[in-house]
Length: 207
Image (cartoon, rainbow, N blue to C red; front, side, top):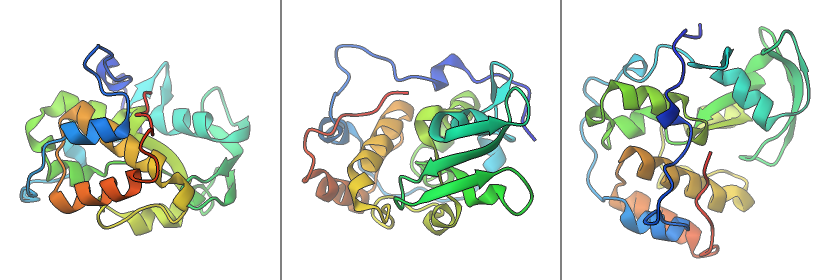
């Protein structure tokens, strides 16, 4: 069930200033490299007790509206049907709201909550964790089974099967981790560097 609180403005865009890196390669160079902290104390509710709301609509449906094409609606907010060109697999998925069908399209936290928790989110405070959970920059509509297979993996353990999307995926992870001061482990940084070798001018996304 969606919670009534609105998404903090800080959760909706990356602050722009002269020092902001423009490319994923430059952004990756700014990320701290450390080991994982213990997972002790991790709970999904430490970030958000369900989807936040923006302009009266919950974030799940906002992301479905952003990422799906040919949409129909059950009401002013809730997406009933649509078509997703899944970035993770390259497949075309026909979404239909309902028990047994909605899960075909899931909303992925590009930087997984558990991964973030073990790499700095324990220390950023409840408000920033709430913004992290509900930030469109960190949310993508994707193929449900593929999202489940990703689980809480970082880039050293999982990358999208669709190789043409890997540069954009890694860039989005870097942008999110920079924004919320989440670090990377050495194996994760190396995996990101390998991906970015093929796209050194890949820009960091903003939401």
